[in-house]
Amino acid sequence: MTHRVFLNNPVKLLDSLYCLVRLSSGRGIELQGYLLAVDPVSDTAVLADKSSGDINIIPGVNWDSLKLLDSSESVKNTAREMVKGTDNVSLPPGELSMAKENVISWLSKNNLPSEVVGEDIIIMGSVTLQPPYTESNCVANNEIILQRVEHIIQNMPSS
Image 1 (tube, rainbow, N blue to C red):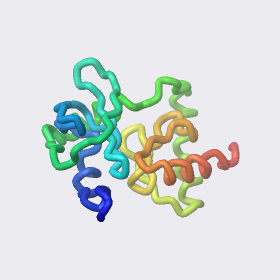
Image 2 (cartoon, helix red, strand yellow):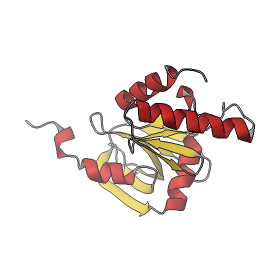
Image 3 (cartoon, rainbow, N blue to C red):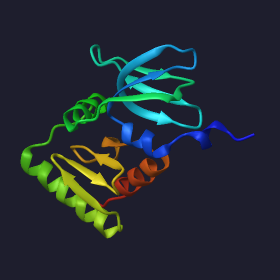
């Protein structure tokens, strides 16, 4: 017997992240919200309610029921804002700019490709590093990659 994880479409799941979606739980309950994370092994989704901002973990998702309602960049940005940490330390603009440059340089020395998108640094296309650019400000869907990037940033020499 084939495990259900092999029946999922990983590209569809990845493309649906941070989008407004509708899906059904294993009990047939239809839910709608921003898709913040997926676990195709346990068929679990993390949805943020569009109106209240509440974050819910939905076990036993029927991935065949996943329907993309809105995948615009404005919706994706709204969803990403919902998962940003609220414990960010504010730095003066000059120090923040220097911290960003130092991290980009350190990532480059460690052969990690990065690009700047607005205030954020996107590392290897899968980890978002938000101001003030410390390891605790990394966001990613893949926990293994997230931990490795956090470790590299944590070991960055202070300048």
